[in-house]
Amino acid sequence: MEALDIENQIEESREESEKAHFTSFYDWFYVILIFLICIPLIACDFYFALNRKTQECLAQEMPFGISLKIYLVVRGFVTIFSSWFLFSSTFFSMIASADDLKKTNCFCNSIFILVKIFNLIWSIIGSIMFWKYSDKSLCSDKTYNYIYASLIIMFICLFRKK
Image 1 (cartoon, helix red, strand yellow):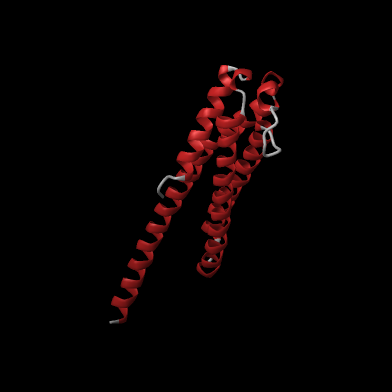
Image 2: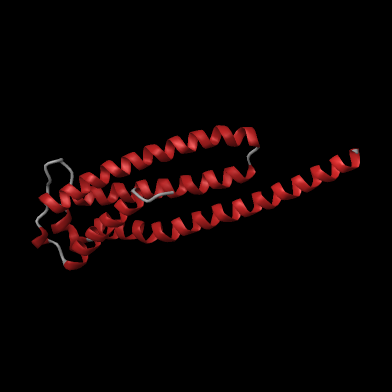
């Protein structure tokens, strides 16, 4: 009878190990996919925000007291923070014990919700600034197309189903 219990425990342990291995692979695949999407957006945010050729377009004063240049720089830093936090939380979830993992998941979910709310508000502000108040004749085609596309990508990312 005890031999059967031990065999069942070994089998359950093996199944849990395989499931954990698959989950960790899935988590890392998701993190790598997010990085592949975020790195070009971060680079382009900083490129357009700091490029002298785009200053006439991005430095326009808006009613909110910020410019599109500041919008892009802040979005770039928030995306860097989000990516770093996603990587750190995924790594920690692989090495944490079950009790630590429950506490950490609650904390991580809270941070991700706050970042998502901030990104939503920031994207709405950026959209209003770009589509309503900016003088698009001052923007080059590249700058206009990048901001237009990045705002749409941001809204798609914010409203996607998990």
